[in-house]
Image (cartoon, rainbow, N blue to C red; front, side, top):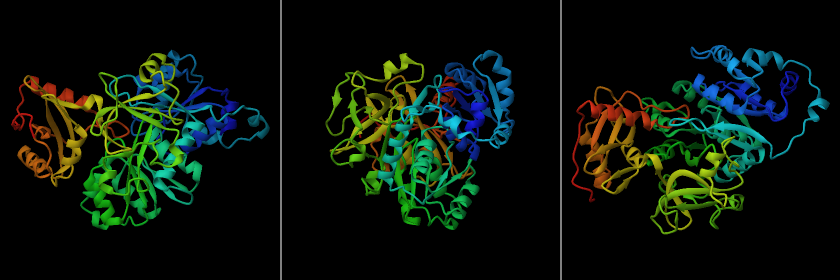
Length: 498
């Protein structure tokens, strides 16, 4: 395949955009593009003309590889319609094209003449672009190899394991947790896409899967599935989870039912990563809400190259006291050098010491541990008190009537903001009431000011292609309903104490 790409005119450092579901050809293209001297820029199958034209223009992509049809959409037709606006785009290829191209002859001497270096850019993955244009995150071979070593050390992942790749093979979730570790340590790589619960469970059993990564919503879905007693997941050793903190009750349920260790992962396409696994955090309850502060003496040498600090978003003071909440700044050999062709964004994201500012708030736990608090933009500030939407969501996910939930800020003229929760009922005919949710949080010992004060029932929580909740859509929906004077169940809480 690499030879065929070179024969088609691919040159050193050319960008190849790829929009494919999780088919084996996508995995092959990661390797073929690199071997041909190019840089692969994968994008989700859900993206359309707006994202495609922006990224193709920014990267001056030389090739685009896509499908004739996938779930009612033709990437081929889209690209052909826009090719006239993209002078650098020389080739538009389909799955059928590359399958045929891969049958051609292989000239080892010709490919061997292409210069290769471990610091060459291997991938350009993209931020989700839910509230702005996607940002390109170029990572080198060395960046990715460090990621694989970190994951292996923290989770015990190694050779001869079978892993299932459920997440789209386009970003840190699947590339960093599934694909690169598999390339590094070997084993069997099983693909799945688009997500189907019954097929997924079937693959886990039939393929005797040992390792996978699932977003918390899927973990919760499995734990609450009506046929959960029939699922035989005894071969599974480890399930990693990211995109949002896992709920403790789900971690305990998987441990109780199948002896499965759920590993808590936090990471970003920029290359940052923290892992709380049974090696460093054996207690499940602690693993649900904190990570080893890598680079400190409590953690193995393999992550000594990583340095972190918590920074006050307003004063820029470095926070060291237990309980303090600040933005996580991160530096290490796994982090990108900067956003692709966006020096303006790079200058805003890095400080003079090379620390990348993640946009996520963490809390200093006991010595050498930090816990995810929330994304800066998702914090709810009620009367001067900071409320973590993630904490509200994870607590309510333990309610027997709740299948899924999202918490957002509701504007309030007195307190500034109050908490509104969007809930997907487990049984549509028997949804929870706001009073039941408040009573549930009260029974869990949650502070009064964190209790929800408005309930919106919804059929499905909107998420982007990698499982992150689209809070912007929910906030806009809430503002529209409040502007129209729509009434929803609400409970005024007694001040901000508690």
